[in-house]
Length: 392
Image 1 (cartoon, one colour):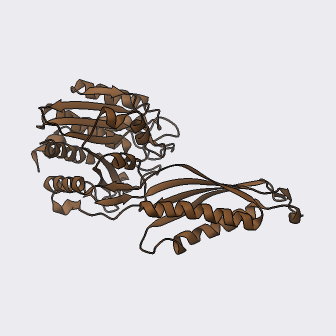
Image 2 (cartoon, one colour):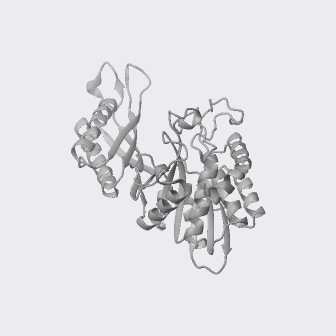
Image 3 (cartoon, helix red, strand yellow):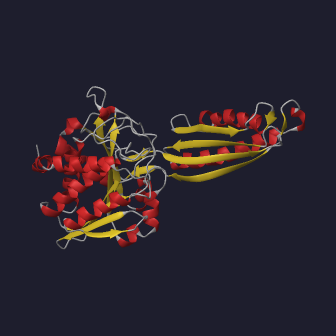
């Protein structure tokens, strides 16, 4: 076991308690007031220069050692989800309808554990920017921090982030060069028809029939417009129309989740959805409007930074505990915005699989999910050794 990993195991108990405290007091996006207070207080205690307010509740801790010119960014997310926890654990959420169901409490604890060691014991030469981001869960906290001048005020030559991955062995690290996570498009289709009596449909233009045809036609985009070796998903998650069985409604709304692992495929999907909806609407005598809501771009890891992360992971854990080129995932992450501005890499750490049992194998965004605390020293040691190598 490396000296760094041994040191982080020695402090694991304190940061496990910290993680469970954050878990007990979850806060949803842009309302992470208690969490950001806790993060800022710890960073200041360890000697970091702390800046608050980027992205509303975001926190950046900066420290410089030596005269090195290189600048490194490490990012953790802080927000929880609007889910009622069902774990029954002693440290379960004390806020009804809100829980850390994605492990952001663990990500924050990992980076804080690394921050303490980097400030007090590690040897490095340059500038370290620790970025604690609000509102990752579909609210675009990364973009908000960037709009507030994140990289102008805290320039980075590279940036990295880590997320836990249920279904993978606890402590295993998974990396990928290139497109790793899909874009996420949130689309609403608003259909305006002519309402009327259900017994006299000839006097109406039925948005339910038109919407039904649109739902079926949308499925042909992936099967007939996207190349078979490319990944794309179009899911209609909601179809909202009408209240009574004998009334043809005036309006209908479809809500879509659209994913792609290629930027050109993403643009193809956007274009074809509009073309198909307009054509279907015309054929049924209704009007339709496609509304694009904020989504996330494709997350693309750059080669040199991913190579460095691989070297650190193998050195720390051994080759048998590292997946060098993991399969891409159709999940999305707003860290993709940061990677569009700065070279870097997004890595996964296994939260547990079925063989290991416990809460670690439960998928994220599930009321029974809990972060695997044994990952705190492993993830923190990874950040420490990555920092020492990058800012050598």
